[in-house]
Amino acid sequence: MAKAMWNGAVIAESDNTVMVEGNHYFPRSSVNSEYLEDSSHSSVCHWKGRAGYYSLVVDGRRNQDAAWFYAEPKSDAGHIKDHVAFWRGVRVEA
Image: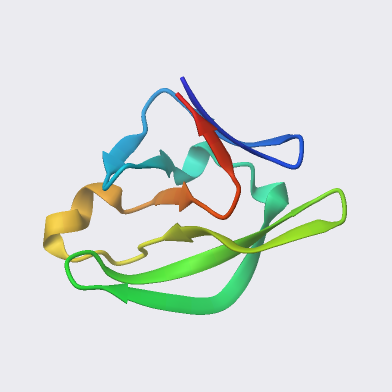
């Protein structure tokens, strides 16, 4: 079971993550939506496509753009569609 935690809260928990480039991608259904806030930030990966971001908000603290996802990944990354990964201090334990 993998868990993503930040500021004392479990942001996501799943036994069905996908590992890509050293990052656990959690199924979107396993992510606690109450901690997510849409972000306008985006980035592009040459083989995965355009990433969108969420900021995390827990107990009044914000972690800007700490989660990312590929809404329409390129074909080689199709297995991470509807998955979310974390960084910027979010601790992932597996």
